[in-house]
Length: 391
Length: 109
Picture 1: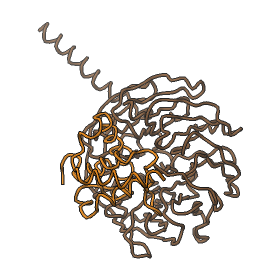
Picture 2: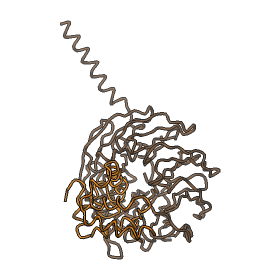
Picture 3: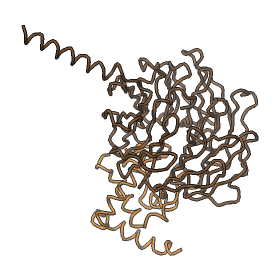
Picture 4: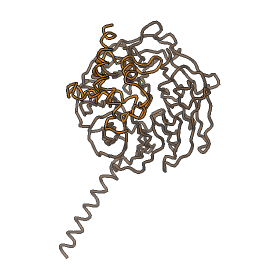
């Protein structure tokens, strides 16, 4: 009798503990770090800088990226090998995993959270899946007007349950309208400029801007006025200057917008370009340590953090957006690949691939707070992306 | 400039001696392998099955000569994102990489 009641008390305590761990935890301060070489990810918590789970078996994760369900419970991981994996980050488990193509580059989640789109290299095209079941909803092959089945780059979500993306070999930008989820309505823009290599959408979801590798400048599409077509911006940038060899393509996602200015990485130059957001004209360049890869503004826009391409990728520079001067240079170690700010920006996490570490910095003092062991880390993604257009 | 004179000699040497593993220090070999997987891999995929750049598997490269592949890595390919690596890699490095690619990283076909 006595031992029975003791057992039931112990049992009750155990129950309440195990339910505590899940029921009382939210996901708003969680994130996913890609371990690119081992096909694994870590689920982390950024309030205290804690590593929660390691999840393995996700295939080739070089250049992998992540989007989150709007309840921030699920992460969708887009692998290089065409794998699409849905993770339950609260419980650290794979929910479902499919191979949707031979070679993919990234993805996006729709405005209503019901669709996940993946951009593919081999074969090119965009596939759209039901976010719950990962069942195929729409298949969009991307043969351009030039007859080439093109690789897809710069895929983003846009208001109106749209996805916007660029065709690398065909020099086109397409809008896929999935307001009717079963039938994608495609609007195409041709001759947008040579070799779009990546793109971004402004945080308000209005402007889609593709970077061009094959010529100077960028292609801008105003999604409020698609009838106006593509506008070339920054046409004169780089003209007459010999470009340096580009050992890694810059990323445009997460570009820095601060006040009236936008800051983007130059291609083939050791510069950050300053753009006036009213005229879309270049108004200045900021010479930096190397060719920038990510130029990311702290959420309040006060500072931007910049990392660099091989062989200058051991460095981070912090630029004051007001004075446009470099105020700090950090040397975290070899191969600083990515940065992610906490939602309100008091800290930034940086992956340092060849050190097998993620470093956490205080963004006011620039002091390193913590080093976390992570195997060959690349992308870091926090769940607050779930509620941002284009991320 | 200097390179154009040295190249045919070095090249002729290596084409006649297709076993290279012992020709460069082990430390350098692992540095080059790391570069191949992680830096070349940023465009060609970490499994070298292709990305923005083409696949670099032995079967994908089977029709390409060692000389051609050397030139692609050394000088880059104009009008494509492939950069020249001659300022970063020596001729010996490049030839070792070409032969590694031809053979396959894990001898896979």
